[in-house]
Amino acid sequence: MSSASDVRRQRRWMYMHKDSDGNVTQEFINGLEIFMYQAGQTPLTIETGKMFCRCQKCKNTRFALSDTVWKHLLNRGFTAHYYIWFQHGEGSYCHQNNKESSSNNNYEAVDCAEPSNLHCGDHYHPDHGGLEHDRIHDMVTDAFHETTTSFADNTFEEPNLNAKRFYEMLDAANQPIYDGCREGLSKLSLASRMMTIKTDHNLGEVCMDAWAELLKEYLPEDNVSAESFSCLY
Image (cartoon, rainbow, N blue to C red; front, side):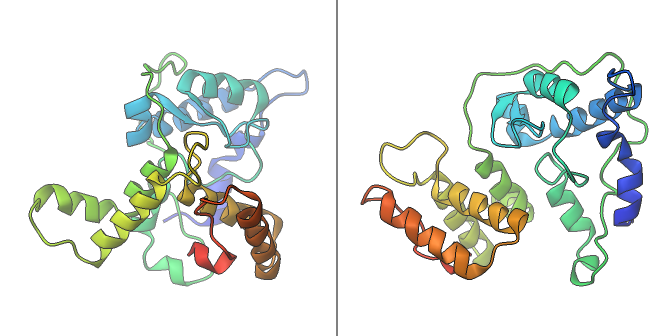
């Protein structure tokens, strides 16, 4: 297993974007190829040819073609502190490899991270399709990886607790926050964004409750937004 400090050392290239002359470093380009390779192996990107962009401008809010993400990251660099690629194919595998370590204070991670014998050759240039897809579906499927595998093997088995939770979360991922809203704005995606905002800005639950109440009040009457932060989980 690799410690958090090991991961930072292995991925220091992510924040060594340009040299003193303003040119993109070769170390960054080599590392970016590895990142794009791994992100390209996720079911969502295989299906759609798209992924969320972690560049300093998009900040993971734009779902774009893989070659667009490549160009953005090459020109702009990564958002800060994204050493664990949990939104680009790493989270579920690392979770499985770190069940024992998750209960202590040492963040063990990323034996699953970088294929050591990877030879990318020319710069990454993916094939891509034209389907729109909400990344939340992929996140739910990753989170319940063993459950979804068992579905395929036991088609007629009565759903267990994990299966029921999977269906509930998938339903939330499919449920628009209100009728007529923009595609991809689901009940689960809103919960995910609020969780991220709380963590990024170290906001208290009282503050988040106030924001949840405000959203509920100002969105159209048929909205399914949570009435309080505690209802998100």
